[in-house]
Length: 102
Image (cartoon, rainbow, N blue to C red):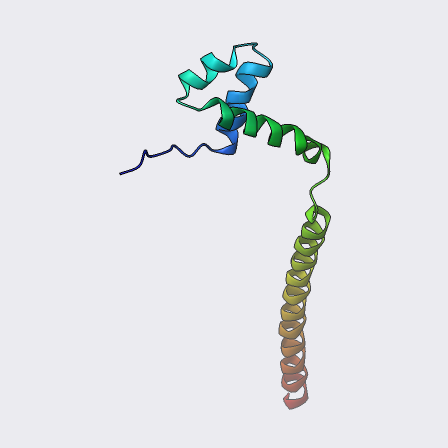
């Protein structure tokens, strides 16, 4: 049976890269401590630098999501107001009927 490889989360990958890039630990030491092949480390590092600009870009859809949430909230308010108006109108009609019968 083949060797089982550990899956690293994005946060773990960044933590491992940080140890080398910021804390100046040698790649060999970082890889040994995490049971990681150096080629994998360098692949992660390449991906990190190629995709680094994405960290500074605004997330697409954030504005749209906020607008949708606002629309949903406003639709609920309108629905509630419609219910209140219907109740008031019903009471008004009932009062007019009662006054007319008196």
